[in-house]
Image (cartoon, rainbow, N blue to C red):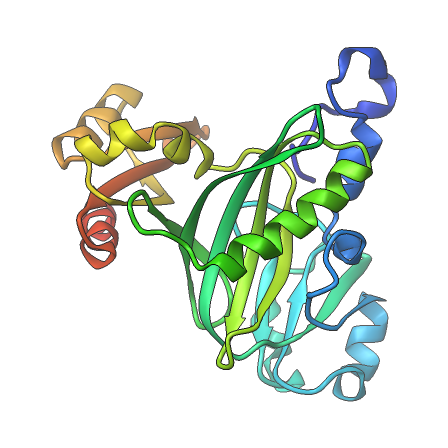
Length: 275
């Protein structure tokens, strides 16, 4: 499960929630993306049993498999054929329904963010280039604190925000968007909430002076003797900690950000910290 809202929300009075929890859960379900975005890849919601039985005839290859909910990029895989199903070992455990999505041969993978006020007006917050593996797993976001986005990209998000506002949502909105080779944009995932990149945009002027024009946000797991040791290690290498969690086996999972005046160096700094 995911923690996009308080659990169990069925036992919590809606009067204490800024946004109706049923609405928030519905909007963050990837299967419902079509309600806010017309310009999204073809997709089907199917059962796991249907996928295993008929995947060859369900969609042209390659294709994308998605869980209906997830965060930090843990719910997406790209498959070139059904022969690659063994690569999904454990990925679809506990899933009953999944999304089978058309593959977009993209040249750019963006994350765009907005804030919708209670007056239903949307405001552009920021954008990033998203780094993913060949199989579609999310690795991190290069937040652009000086570079200006293409107007067409921003407009795609404003159209989605208008629909979200009409449904009664207000607050932060994150959208994952692909751009194909002819320049068309496709919204591929809704993140109807604040994300790890949100504080980077909100503190953009300060972070640009501290870290550089491009700030890379990503997560990693490491062993450390204490939280202080991990924090000091990140700061000594010029980074800043965003969040951290600790497991019983002494492993810390953290989100951190490293910056530079070009995106490649920002990513490299994070890689050097986690290598």
